[in-house]
Length: 115
Image (cartoon, rainbow, N blue to C red; front, side, top):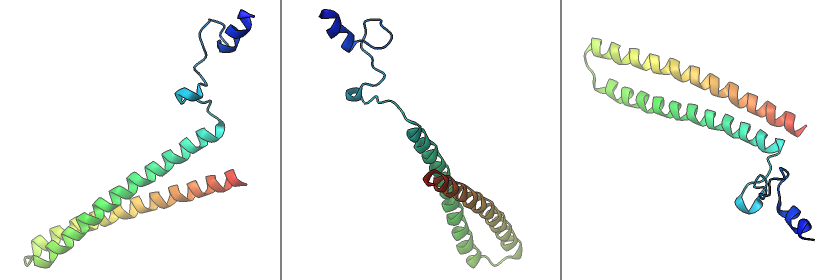
């Protein structure tokens, strides 16, 4: 009878220790494939968020350069501002294209998961 009680608290290893791999009270539950899919999804979303944050920084830089260009009267200074703005605009285009591609991939993954 004592073995019956002991066996109910012993993990599969048979070492006399309780199994902690799937202890719900400890917050340790077995992971399913759907959990792993959510982790991948969350990682993709986090990557997109980081790229959007970069876009926000570039937008702020462009706004500041625009305000600066309103006060500049010398041609060489204006050319410098224009060059910086063009570089930032090119970077925005590259990042935006990458974000669009990632979002389309996420949408395809979600649709294939639902199908």
